[in-house]
Length: 329
Image 1 (cartoon, rainbow, N blue to C red):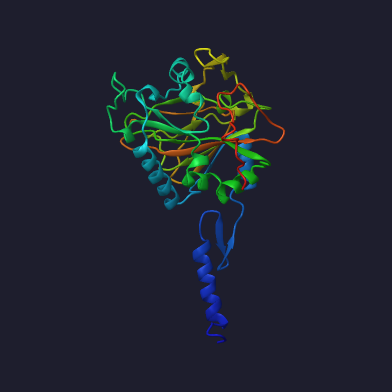
Image 2 (cartoon, rainbow, N blue to C red):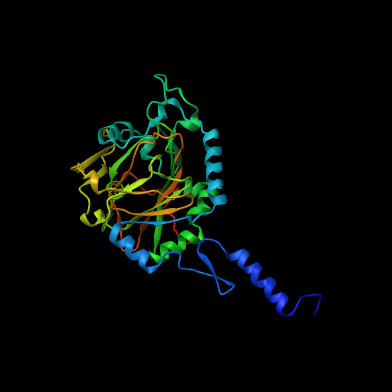
């Protein structure tokens, strides 16, 4: 030995096993007894599958500790929230209810650069008081967790997410919004069939991708995502637009709300820590959660900004306080 260190086979053996321990995690592999980084979190075949189907599941991209950190942080945020009764907005995806409950509320329209709270149906009495514990009443928190909460910023801009973006060919991706979705046990609301590009419109189309992370197991019983494979190839049939300032409601839909064949939907149940990629025009939904288990998820949307125009008619707009930040750091 020299300088108190180890030499020879024993040192190599211990170094090899130390590397195996440190590097054996999602996105890495061990071959031939030696650990090495595997940078292909998404294979060429998976990229092609995403292009064909409009969605892709990457199982267990995030570990138990990362999921726990997100769940604990959102719990802290909920306990500290103080929402005035007149801003207690119920979340809905039914078109007319959406116009009435969200579109007419400045709270919703100005939530893009803030942390705001949206609630399940039936959780308030006629005085706007909670009928359930507040942590059991929230539908989602949005839309700038990625900008202001370190835990969610670290997940959104993590090396794993950035690598996925590069594998998908994103050149100048920016983050346009983020949200934490609770899908509460027994009351977690249905999200009706929709296309994200209806609400987040770009020219040309095809520049929006949703990154949906299962913070808890998502099953067919507690409201996993469902997709119509290949439906992104047909474009969109309606859009939600801002109306002129001072107009009530503040948003409106143009185009027709299509009818989708329920038999075409396929479920995408995923274990905790999985990432689901959602192309902006693919039709997807989630059912009511009638189980006793919640289905927490953290979701954010990314736009390829190179040679892309973000519609000035979208409900969500970048602000001086929060321009759309880059996915790549």
